[in-house]
Length: 502
Ligand SMILES: NC(=O)C1=CN([C@@H]2O[C@H](COP(=O)(O)OP(=O)(O)OC[C@H]3O[C@@H](n4cnc5c(N)ncnc54)[C@H](O)[C@@H]3O)[C@@H](O)[C@H]2O)[C@@H](O)CC1
Ligand SMILES: Nc1ncnc2c1ncn2[C@@H]1O[C@H](COP(=O)(O)OP(=O)(O)O)[C@@H](O)[C@H]1O
Ligand SMILES: [K+]
Figure 1 (cartoon, rainbow, N blue to C red):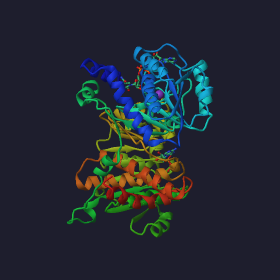
Figure 2 (cartoon, helix red, strand yellow; figure 1 turned 180 degrees about the horizontal axis):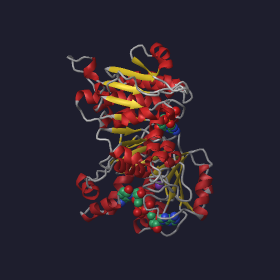
Figure 3 (cartoon, rainbow, N blue to C red; figure 1 turned 90 degrees about the horizontal axis):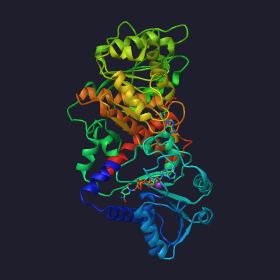
Figure 4 (tube, rainbow, N blue to C red; figure 1 turned 90 degrees about the vertical axis):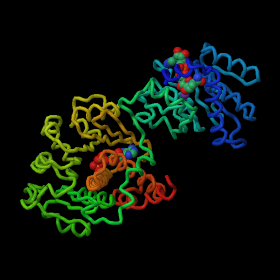
C-alpha cells in the first residue's frame, strides 16, 4: 500500500489532497451510519501518522456537522500534515486530551491511532488507554484497520482496539481476514478512493494473488442454468466413500451436502451394515454396501465397482483409520479426489507429499487446523498465517488445500489464495464439515461432467456453505444451525442471491 501511495504522490497527486479525499469518504459513511441526534458526542483517537491525519479531517467535518467532538492525542509529535490538521481543528475550539478518560462516555469513538504504519508493539499509556476503551460499550469505528493489528497477519501487537466497524481504505489489508483479527475488526467495509489500476498492477503484479470470495464470483461458477437437453449422467456422477458403524451420521451428512449440490448421480459406498440406514435416509442415492472390518469400517470396495465410471470421488467422512486400504485405493485411482477427515488422517500416515506426488489427477484436501498439522507438519505458523500455510501446502503437494477455520482459506498450486470473508460461528459444531465435503464434491463432479474448470467450484462451495449458515442463523440464531438444518438451507439460500442479482 505504501508503495502504491508513493507512485500516486510521485505522479502529482498532493498528499494533502488525497488525505482530504479519503477522510471525506470516511466522514460520509460515518454520517450515514451514526446520524445526529442519536449520536451526539464523538471521541476521536489521533495518532502521530497519516492515520491520525485522516482522523483529524473526520473530526473537523464532524464538528462542522454539529457533533460534539473530543480528541485523544497521546503523542504530541506527529507528521507535518497531521500536525497542521491538528492545529486547525484546535483553532475551532475542539478539545484535545492526552488522557483517554474524558472520552470514555462518548456515544461513538473514531479510531485513528495507527494504520499500516504501526511498526512496533503498543505499550505504556497508549496501551492502557486502548484497554480502558475496550471495556466500554460504545460503538468504535476504526480507520483503515483497528489500531494495534499487524496489517498483513492480523496479529495483535501489544494490544488492539476492538472495533464494531472497520473502514478499510483503498485496498483490503490482508490482516483483516485472519482468524486472529476477527475479534477486533467488527464489520469490515472498503472505502474506495480511486486508486488507478495501473499503480496496483505495477506494485502487485500478477504474482501470487490473494482474493476474497464474493457472491458475484461464487455464483458465476454455479452449474446454472442447466441445458435443456441433458440427463442425469451429464450432470455429474459422484462416488462418496464414507461412514462406519462408529460414525454413521458423517456419511449421511456428506450425502446431504452432495444431494444439495444438485449432482446428477450420487453413489454412496458405506460398510454393508449401514446400507439399510443410508438407503432409508437418502432415497435418491445409490447405496453400495462394502465388505466391512470387525470394527465396522469399510474393509475394501466391492469387487464389482469400476472407479473409472465416476466423475469424482469423495472419501473420508466418518471412515475411521481402519478403512486405510480404501483410501489407498482411491489415491491410486486417476479420478479427481476430495479427501476429508479420516481420508486426510490416512494420507498423513501414508506420507502426504510423496503420496500426492504420485497422483496426476485433481486432489482437494479439506483439513481443519488439527488435520492440517498432521498433513503438513513442516509448514509452521499456520495458526497465525493461514494464507501462507495453504499457499505453501498447496505448492508443495500439488493439491488444492482448503483450510477450514472461521475464515476459510483455499490455496491453489499456482500460488493463488482465496479467502472467504463472511461466515458465522454457527458453523462451529460437529458435522458442518461433512456437509461441506459433500457439497464441494457434488459441485466438482458437475464441473467434470460439463468439462469446465474444477478449481473455482471449491470457492463456490465454501461461500455457499457459509451463506447457508448465515441465513439459517438469521432465522434460528447461532445455536440453531445443526448440520442437517444447514443442508436444508443450502437448498433455500441460493434463490435469494439469484433473485437479487447478488
Ligand atoms: N495520504 C493519505 O491521506 C492516505 C492515508 N492513508 C492513511 O495513512 C495511514 C498510514 O499512515 P502512516 O504511514 O503515517 O502510518 P500510521 O498513521 O499508521 O502511523 C505511523 C506513525 O506511528 C508511529 N508508530 C508506529 N508504531 C508505533 C508504536 N507502537 N507506538 C508509538 N508510535 C508508533 C510511527 O513512528 C509513525 O510516526 C493508513 O493506515 C491510512 O489510515 C492511506 O490509507 C490512504 C492515503
Ligand atoms: N468460528 C467459526 N466461524 C465460521 N465457521 C466455522 C467456525 N468454526 C468452524 N467453522 C466451519 O465449520 C466447519 C467445521 O468442519 P470440521 O471441523 O471438518 O467439522 P466436522 O468434521 O465435525 O464436520 C468448517 O467449514 C469450518 O470452516
Ligand atoms: K486505525
